[in-house]
Amino acid sequence: LQLSMHICILERQIFDFLGYQWAPILTNFVHIITVILGLFGTVQFRPRYVTGVSKIFLYNKYM
Image (cartoon, rainbow, N blue to C red; front, top):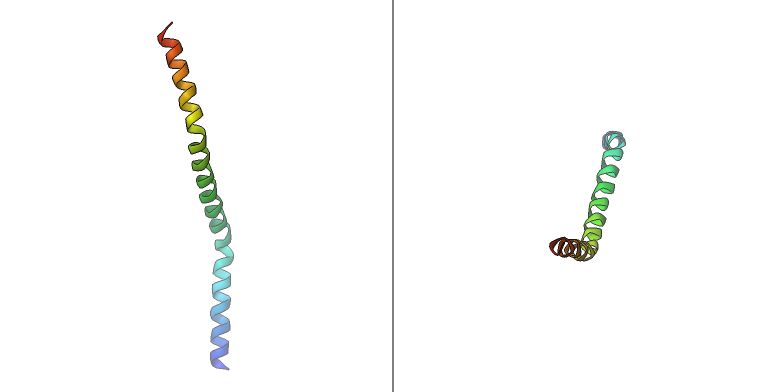
């Protein structure tokens, strides 16, 4: 009975602590996913950006 009571108390303390931690954990996860998706978007967008900027530079060079 003593051991099961200590296990229950330990579980309760762990879940009480995690109750306060769910929001920062979830926010951190969403931030990491957003950064990863942003990096993929940047990699896909870069060739069009480079060609567009080079066209503008060439246009300005001949003006």
